[in-house]
Image (cartoon, rainbow, N blue to C red; front, side, top):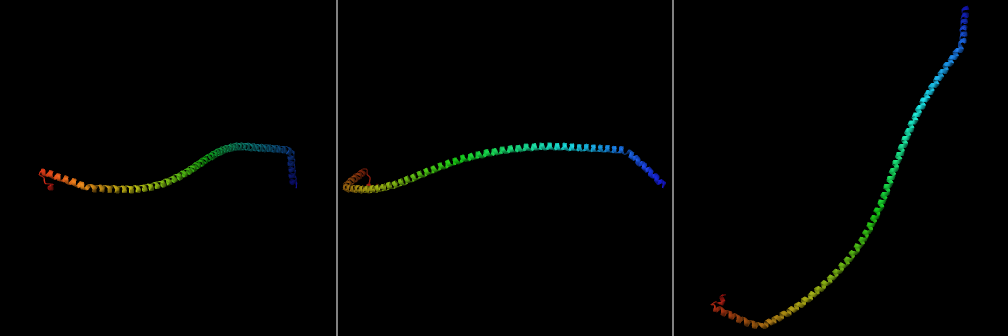
Length: 202
């Protein structure tokens, strides 16, 4: 029994000793806790500052990227507007060219139609004139043939009359010619004999 009592006495003394030193330990523990909390807060603030810096850097990069995209968009819109304006200008120029060409073609078609009508009228007139000329030529040829036929008949009649007259004259003159020929023949024979030539041998 006495040792247990003694032991209890020591324990009680230690507890008393602890109780005496507990305010300092608690203060130190609190101080340590405050330091830890302060360090934690500082670390937390540092992390927050890093995150804030990273967020600001990201925001700045995003702003720059956004500005770049906006510039690219503005450039693309400007190019699109320029392309649209050029396409509109080309379309207007093409429309104007098409209108001008259409007017030219209409003028050419109208001119060609007028020329065709004129050519058709001239061809009709020329055909009618040619037909009239052919008719007149046929009539002239018919008249000439009739005239030639009449002239041939007249000439034939005149020729027959002249031949008949000539034959009559020849018949009338034949006795005289025969006598003249006979006299001429006799004279030639005499002349030949004078030159000692035989007329039968010549």
